Amino acid sequence: MDIIDESIEKLVQNKNSILNRLSNIQSALEKTKYLNQIRTLDLPVRDCVMISDTNLPNDYVDYAVTQYMQNHHQDIHTIGACDCYTLDVKNSNPKSKQLRTKNVFFYSPKPMYDSNYTLPAGKYLSVIYSGSYDYTKEWVNKMFLYAKEHSLKIISDPIEFGYINEYETTDENENIIEVQMQIKS
Image (cartoon, rainbow, N blue to C red; front, side, top):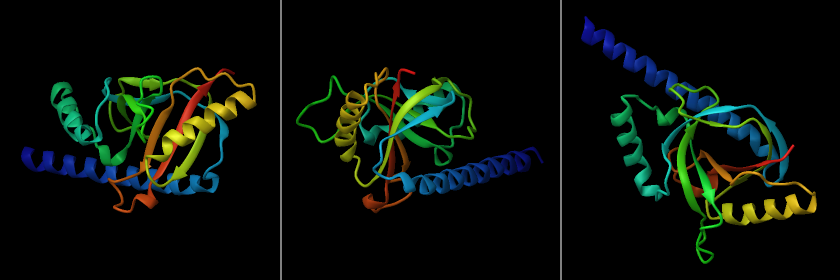
């Protein structure tokens, strides 16, 4: 009976994770009405799970998640969350199409895990775009220019949210990505 109860519990967790992800995908699709528009958002504190506080190539993210779960004895249902990266503009290779990352974390509006990292509440510049992650660098530059033109002071590194990406689609054009930068209120 204990084994069956454990199996049922895991299936319920998986079901809830999938339902959470479907909700997140629906939310991402609703955000597409703001595609390619730089906006200012007032956001609450957001709980996350920091997987790695160092630069990680995309190919190592799954390995880092597995390592994190083993080291912290916590299941992270990544299907129920979006993968996020703090971007390191200053130390990025100017010739590269993509920006270097400072860390990797997972975020979900309805977290199903114990948080070890939070994104602070405050005002953020935001842009949502679809397509390749290669466009992030271009959007970050546009956001810096927008901030300058509107006399806004950026007080954080850019954060990239992969709402819909290679985990949900094989068509890069269907990706939905958001970039946020906190600004001084």
